[in-house]
Image (cartoon, one colour):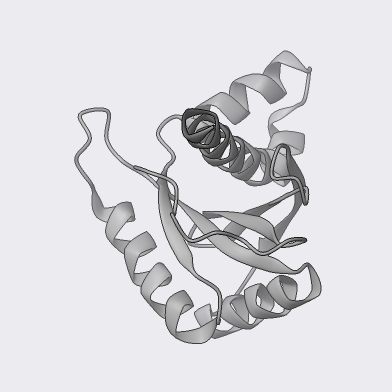
Amino acid sequence: MNPTSEPLRSGERVLALDYGQKRVGVAISDVLLLMAHGRETWHYRSQRELLERVQEFAKQESVGLIVVGLPRNMDGTEGEMSQKVRAFVAALEEHVRVPVIVWDERLSSLQAQRTLTGLGKTVRQQRQIVDQLAAVFILQSYLDSLATQRNRSA
């Protein structure tokens, strides 16, 4: 997947979401688009509630692009969860006035779990932040890709 060619305006940031059926991990970039920072994990009861929360967050944080992690199988194919993510992205595009792209999130949750285990976090502690950390890994991958693209253009 290539980073979006739509340039962000000065001061805009990128929001990343690790979408799940009950929880969503949230990460946001710095204004220089170099570093991903975990923000929180949102628990939600309805898609409408989640869409409104994303819209409000995007407005408050000067978000110019939303990156949603797309789960793929190791062979690159998409499974059932990928279709749920794509349906969420379609709803998000209708509800929020910010461009939305999907980004390959293969192994981001596993990487997040391993990182937290390495830090000595219990399974219960991990449950609270694993989605947020997965969103950080998704966003950092996207930002690194942007940096590579900028370096090639220079």
